[in-house]
Image (cartoon, rainbow, N blue to C red):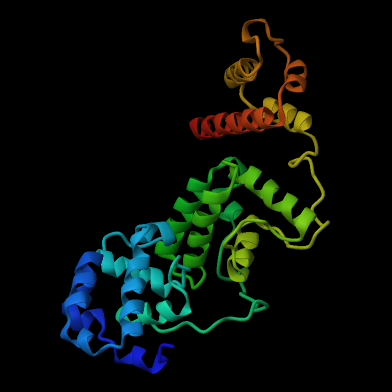
Length: 298
């Protein structure tokens, strides 16, 4: 078993690469560690863990784990990822301590799940950032505006918000924020919490705050904005689309039917013939049209 007291004896990347180490690449770091004379004195277990720790960075770029300042060098970006406390595949607690030593990052203490983050005073909601039509915006819109807000208004929760939006968007089956909120509410009412993976307690609190929802099952009954049936949602979306877009959207629904040329022209005659997946796609395409129309009219 590896003696944890050996980890503080490891050199830092600054020791190995010099004061400008953050401008170097991950390959530079691996080569510096591989050829350091100190390596000869490391026990076999420590040497193996060091190699595997740096190898854990090989799967993705820093921006895939966390919103980083891409004007920094590669090692500088990885340091930001470690400072943010992001979970890295292949780097458990032991290897995380080794990486923190190399990158001179303090080991973060575990925070209680029940900690009150005081988000209301520190972090705006998506509605505040994007305005009344925020539900028609996309995940990309949300992430972009949150990054812009954070650059001007540093917040201890800003990085968590950006990271949570980015990671949740990758796993969401929806495109617009309104549909994403419906997805979260459905999961809460059914299971008591979202079923999205890799969403920890703190990130979940931030996500709920951004979407202005609570995590209590049964508190989110459908409203006029979040109707119960697909037919009602289709009708509401059709009525919200400008006339110039309505015919184009209806035509998309017709194209999903076996005989598009002889398909019915009324929305109420089209949707009963569509599968659940086709209806979901039709809604998503209509929401994208509505978003474009909203931007054109702004």
